[in-house]
Length: 190
Image (cartoon, rainbow, N blue to C red; front, side, top):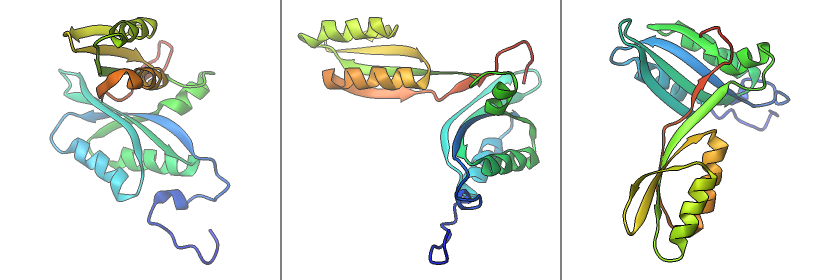
């Protein structure tokens, strides 16, 4: 930043301009109680961090624990700050940067999957083409009428993006995506 530029209030200006912005997947284990998600999201919005994907679900019912999976971007310094600040929130039990952990295990990225429901018009000549494309992408028909289909597709976000792109000109009506669920390979847990 030169003398004439003003900080924007975003945490992305904390790191040197030469630092590369990276996408990381964080897994956060929290007590499942009211207000926890709001505190986690507040940390991001209050410091100008962006969330690319967010999923939350109770994963250990007896222990009342939920897992929050967050995909965010930042320089290595910003990502370390995010992790450190998340670890200070009560009742966060554990924060794991799955992207860093995958690198430590000799892998490029953690296993990441997303589910989407995609509604597409299906009339006339395009009906057969829509079904052919769904088959090619291994999308399941979960609802069908004479005028539309609803498909369920699971996979990497890029696969879902590609499916949406190819059905768009055929009559894309609506898309609902879950966000990314992620886990590292191997026998070790979070």
